[in-house]
Amino acid sequence: MRKLSKKQRAALIADVFEARRDLTGLADAHRLTPDDLAEWIGRAENHRTLTDLCRLADLQTQLMLSRYRQVAVSELIKQASGGDETSAEQARKACVDLLKTDLRRADTTPEASQVEDDVSAAQREAASIREALFGDDKNLPAEGEGCG
Image (cartoon, rainbow, N blue to C red; front, side):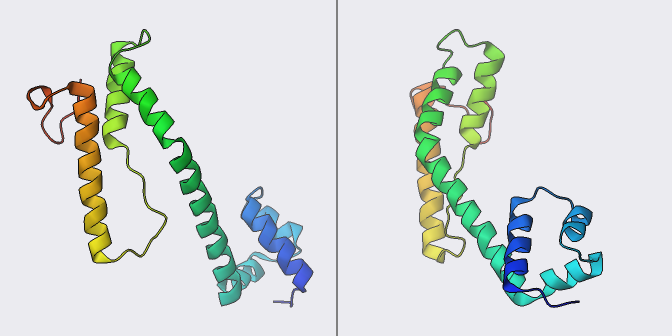
């Protein structure tokens, strides 16, 4: 494979990250063969850069989800409780979505104790949501059951 200049490498990384071309289009746009493209991504520095960019994009997504999660959960609770002329099917789907809602944490390498804390917090959150939807424990569906 021919050596790419810093400018060419940056352009290729940006093009890959934008994901607007298929692999053939990507190779053609940068005057590379498919073998050249495969060899390029196989280089540790290129793979690491794109992996880190993906991690950054995932973190940005998690931050965005965190900001709007409370609003979304409030809306799901309204729908699941049948408010605002919600159809029974829409309420059922909202309830299922609400019970399945989980936010993966941005830290992908948690300590074992942190994982246990996160599981406990998620269980408490799920119980709280079920209580908000169904009232006291007598009306709660069993763990793992749907609500409709």
